[in-house]
Image (tube, rainbow, N blue to C red; front, side):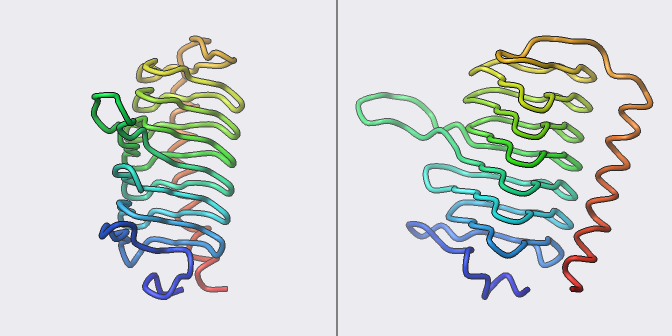
Length: 183
């Protein structure tokens, strides 16, 4: 699908989404405003990336799986404060129906299905926020750790096998996106 004619990609107040030609944007996706999607990234069915109050960045080869919602924390009336963008690094995995709001996911970070990362939260490189977990505002999952629960807490260090498995999932989604683009 041509990104220039995708019905869900639209500007907001003069900010136009910047989408690399090799990125896969599935039907049903909504990408609004100040959003950057880098090369070979994949945004799956029915995701919403709303960059109306600040920027959203999706790094190369990262994937946002079906139903994920990405937003930012913008300045509020009567409150001084900076915008908290949502920044997703390279080779990141964002599971189905995750919610990311004004947070950071480092290169090779993993947010599980249905997990929530709140304002100022951070997922480190080769770290996992487990499916269904809730990372409260300002908390960070350090590199190489698994955090679980609501609120999320440290569960254990990840094994080398688990870290390698995350890398293989990134490759899987690049291939899968190519097949979906062809069909």
